[in-house]
Picture 1 (cartoon, each protein chain N blue to C red):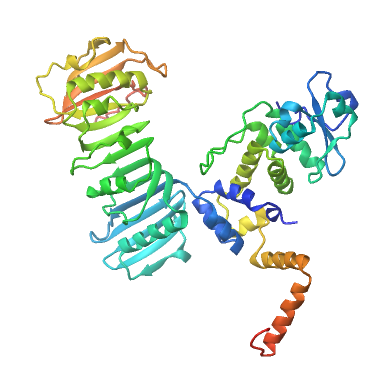
Picture 2: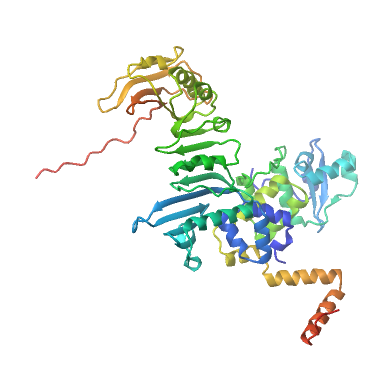
Length: 330
Length: 201
């Protein structure tokens, strides 16, 4: 008796729910009934990524790839000619490759809309958008725990607006130049890591509401008092790998020691000649970390060039000895 | 605890526990009998409800016939009860609707499920029938892991997936079983079509 067919549909669905995108695609090809089964099973990818880069052959041509778990679809082309490749684990399956006389951005829009029609929403544990300077289709919805938007022009706000997640575990938005990012409650609810390497309007009150200790924020509205208050939260909640990095407007002659709360035990440390820091201290105690991590934290201030970048972290000592190449004379 | 040491055995008078805990007796469809602790039974929603409804006393358990589980054979039931005994007292996972579920297969479960595919599918069937949530989770995960990196052809072989033709044949057989006249009607329809008739009616 065929084993699979002895199972009821609910159990088959339960099994398919564990399959990643690639395995689901393969299963869909087995028979009509398996196609129906896979299509009706809810799907949440582990990782969904869209990235774009300029071709090494021609500056007008770009390569856009969409990764869904181990499956990749590439849209390569310029103007209104595009080649579409598909593959698993970076290996292109030539039999599925085709050339279309359509613009690659239109093809991607169609792909995303089709994907959404099939699964209701583009849902993944992590969604990454890397250098893809295109606005999402108007009705597109994404949902994820971890969202990374890296240099996607000024479209980061639109992608963020079209994200249905009520909170994030990790949120990472990187944009060299661009509009000020408005901070909302959803951003403030980020639970593990919040990295906004673009200017935002976060205030002191918002800063001390944060519950995540891996933090990178640039805001002219954060004051020295806000830093002082957040530092206590960071020391209480921070895990070993967490880093606090806040870039704020601060006068160069500010007495930096005043950024550290009086309740903490710390001492100033020598600034190495190679360092761009203007202030360095080692926080050795006076805080109670919820994870039991009481290693000394290195606290430093440097200017980049007008704004003060204030960083606090556990400084890992290099364990690998520095090997020098032997100098052979003559 | 290893699979071999799990405290479920075919009935053997010498092995009857002396402790005061209640042990229920179950019988598979091939007349194999098992004694299973009350706590282990709680892993199965179906069996737990059944024994609650029966309201057996310790004497009833000994004197009345073993509870028959007619759809499951002894080999499969032994695995099921070994699993239940090993995981007795553990919290039963609540379905929060998340997809995919985060399921780790513990070492004991991995060893227990180191069996041929036929028995594994029977174990899944039994876990579903007896409503043992975590056993269903781990066994389904094990089957899903078997699909990793497989081509459609390999998947057909691993899971013994029926082809479209086999699906059609199974559907026809099911229809025929319900209505034996259906096949005749279909054949008559095909015959009339071949003869150029526009419509059966």
